[in-house]
Length: 168
Ligand SMILES: Cc1cc2nc3c(=O)[nH]c(=O)nc-3n(C[C@H](O)[C@H](O)[C@H](O)COP(=O)(O)O)c2cc1C
Image 1 (spheres, rainbow, N blue to C red):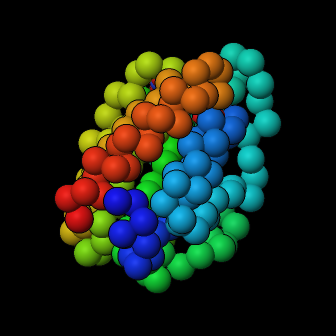
Image 2 (cartoon, rainbow, N blue to C red):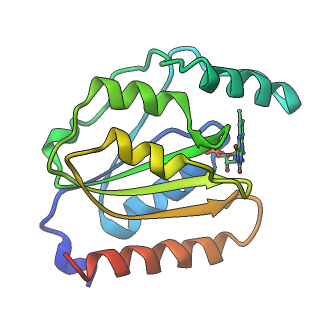
């Protein structure tokens, strides 16, 4: 079923601070035969422990749009785009904000994924606001997938993808 959709060009765009979203992004790319494009801030957060929440949370509150390195792929070249983020302060992380404001995606099929610690908040709602004019195929949130149950999480995303692709 997934193979039948190979003629559609697929891209996985993501930001990841601590590797969870990267892990999911790489596996979505493997499962769907998609290209990968990582959002890389020129100045990355270096705080650890509790300070990272203060630093990252304040970036969200101040609506920061960190400068990113150029994206390695052009989203315009793709039909289906997966977009993934860690949840920061109940929404998407600031590098996604930079991406949304420098790329105006239209008429794409888009699937959203997030990694969190149990509180997704308005992450998908806010992403969808930025993505008006596109067809949102689905969304999925995963609880720190690197922490435990890696295989269970991989199974979960495989099922999610199958469910979305069957309707294409
Ligand atoms: C600055 C900051 C804010 C966070 N805010 C939330 C939050 O609001 N809700 C939540 O469930 N997890 C929150 N987390 C936890 C991360 O979303 C979670 O650990 C995620 O899996 C990390 O993904 P990553 O490894 O790709 O960076 C926060 C983490 C950081 C660093």
